[in-house]
Length: 107
Image (cartoon, rainbow, N blue to C red; front, side, top):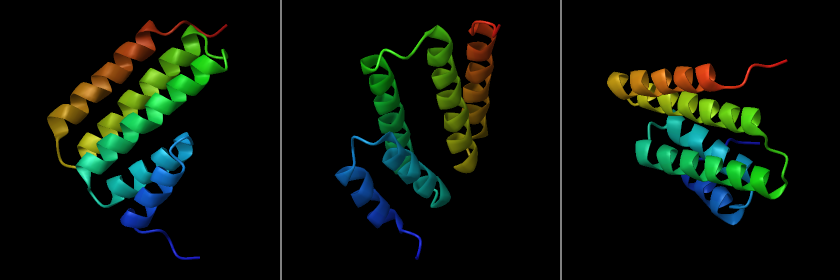
């Protein structure tokens, strides 16, 4: 099976907008194509759905929430680095570190 191109991946993400993984795959495809706006939109959609799903299932505690935020900051840093914005990548990395430092310790 051939890999989906960016336009096909956009259609999949649109048709399966209730599935966070579709948005994450589109983020990766956009990142690979250096399509910054699409990657940012997909990343936002992915984390919007992840946070909404975790709230509706009542399975998210503070530690899980902090891990999601840390993962978001790391992926944002990767996006900025991949598109050549080192300063924004550094800021996003710093944010990921701050979130990790504020996260409840694992017992």
